[in-house]
Image 1 (cartoon, rainbow, N blue to C red):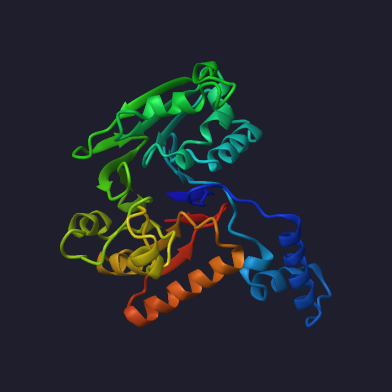
Image 2 (cartoon, helix red, strand yellow):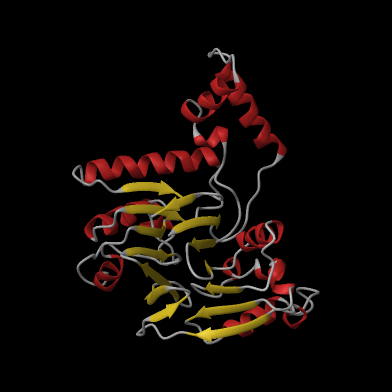
Length: 317
């Protein structure tokens, strides 16, 4: 299995402006002055080995959408603005239809469904789109966002077959060649995490969930759900100070609690997700570095790898 990240921001999409792009170019050129770049290979090595990620690239601005690859059919989590890029990729690669798409929603807040009106495969007759979630009002949420006066194209204008399927968190499902389970999470209006298992590999998608330090008490069900995951995609929108004080009860978690829960649960790879929209690329670089430093202090013996999700990241199990 592989996971491809089409959208990684929390709350709302963001974009770079001209001044921010210029600042990246200036920083790269200044750094290049100190190096002898006599060939294309030298340039590639300079970009990859010398420049920080915040200068040579960026974390992107699409809201939540990930794709799980290597399955019998298309498997996605959430339908934020990253879903638009996924759909455009499918159409460009000649896979516009007929096909089956399974979209698993954490919850129907706007940043997790706002990409669907722009999902081109949904306009293609013959495509089948199954939208799963634990909230019974999922279809209502999708219809409302595409009704006047908010949007000019109603849901029924999209000619693909669309089904909204309400899941039971106490059940196990077999869909698209995966074994899938869900868990209720702490978020305003509730959200749900998912585990996806295939051929001995386990991916956990847990976003929009506020965790507490009580790992062995109230967090025990979450700990059990995360246990031995090969990859944990974890909502770390806030710093520990923000989650504990200024943004307590806002429904998101921190990088520090993500490390503590993941280490305790024996997670092999932790990917921080739902990036704070107020943070620029440089701030997110520092956020990742601080998280890795905390892991070294908190658990020197841990071999767990930590990533910070960005639009275009691909992780292979």
